[in-house]
Image 1 (cartoon, rainbow, N blue to C red):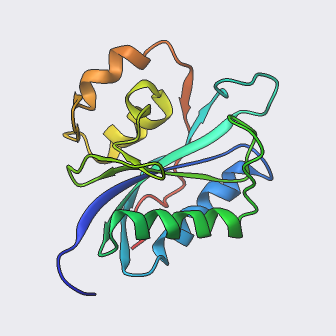
Image 2 (image 1 turned 45 degrees about the horizontal axis):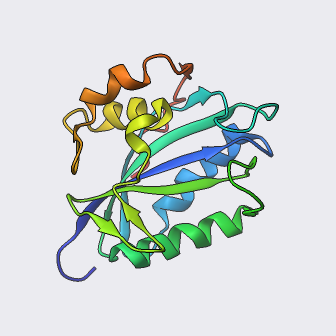
Length: 171
């Protein structure tokens, strides 16, 4: 590994093709990202889909990565994992085999056509806030304050914590 490492948080989600297995396998794939180390993965959470109704529930988690990749390189690596898992971007809020969202990259704020960090809606999603706080209880969202301060805003969203099955720390 080269230079200084950075802490990044990635949201994992799936609601097709055995989503429990998909998210577990995706966590293992994150452990194999180039120039990165998987530090921790939250428990799994079941949530109802947002936007388009009538699709299966999602399985979600959040992972903490130590990475030597810059944010754009990390995004490219995440997209490559999604493609390996058969992700197609047919329409907004479509069902998916895997969704990997770069939530935070250190305290950086990035706003480009390709990448916005912090993720612009992360603070409004129970499926992000709950697992993020599980592995990073003191986490701050640049420009928004602590992640914990957003719990009331997502408290009405249905979310069910599932048994982690002993896979929280992979490496």
